[in-house]
Image (cartoon, rainbow, N blue to C red; front, top):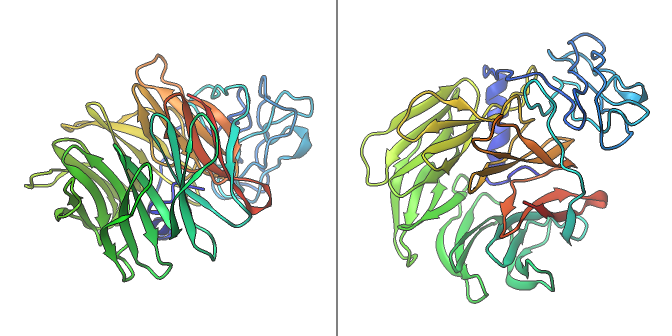
Amino acid sequence: MRDRVGARFFAAVLIACSLGCESRVLGPVVDSNTGTGGHAGTGVNTGQSGTTGAGGDAGASGTTGGGATGGTTGVGGTTGSGGGGTTGSGGTGFIGSGSGGCGISCGSSACPVRAGQPRVVATSPQNYQLMALAANADTLFWGTYPNQTLGEVRSMPLAGGPSTLLAANVIVSQLHLDGSTLYYVTNDRSGGSSLLAIPATGGTPRMIATGSQIGSQIAYVTSNASGVYFAQNNVIMRVDPAGSVNTPVAGLTGVVWGFAVDETNVYWAAYANGGALYRRALTGGDTTTMRTSTAPITFPTVDGDDIDFIEGTNTPATCASAIWAIAKVGGAPRLISPGTSGIDVARVVRDGTTLYWASNSPHGAVLRMIRGQTPETPEILAAEQVNVGAPVVGATDIYWIASAAGGSYEIRTLPK
């Protein structure tokens, strides 16, 4: 499960990329669950055999390699050529699919992998999709997006215990917690959506904004001290703390791919024949272009004096998706996740000096990195996470949603 806020735009971006977007490879693709792991295929009929990994988690062979330039599926199997040996020296790999060898890389060395398995907090019924998460100091919140029926918003103590129903008859695509108020976006399966607010302890939902036509979906809900912000119809809107007045903040060009606010500015990513990152004062004025790229730029995040963002996506030839940072005042962008972070990277979550994110692929992962450490090397917290979405951070643990066997979904957790 990729971060699903804005997921409907993903196909449009991929189509746009196929018409002329080029991603850049930012490092060698390696088996992230091994030492040096298996390299991507060479683009001919079989993938290139990878070097032996050291100290894999298990004895399973690496998954199938792929042609780096779109060759037919590379060799995997039990011989270790996909990055895993039959004796356990390789472990399960992150070599990805046959159309480019997508994988997770930490630059010139293998990604460290934390030992241990995540704990399952909650499991959905079959075909009953868990869709969105939020957490505060003591409570975990989630919303559901069932295939055919209506869903719920529920909460549960982080310490464990029964869950509580907060809202019923909803189809939830996003949650956002602002103090004692929980905001949720519910969809109607016909192109419209609504933003509602409810006390985090339960109560009567209050309508904030709605739209019934195609293209009026509400997404990317966030907040600062002055109010709650969301994107709708390619306009970023602000709602005052009382939730009574909706004020336009910025009109956008292209497909919106996330935004962030601090107390002074709004920063947003958009795609129109290329990705771009913009800045504008919340009070209005000129728009400043901070970064442009032939690849998509997505999910900007406030990180102290920086704005972090994701650049790149899965294309037929490359799988470059990495985390970058740029000073709020502008300047040259800096690559802060060495190598590549896999494909379809979900938004970055900041917790103090630590960044967390998820890479969604057939062999997805949840990763973290401490800003400023030497070297800045991502650590894989949880490997082999299928359809994994953006993590949320609680008081002591990190939480995320991933697919489970039999068509169900799970909320999983590990200590930070």
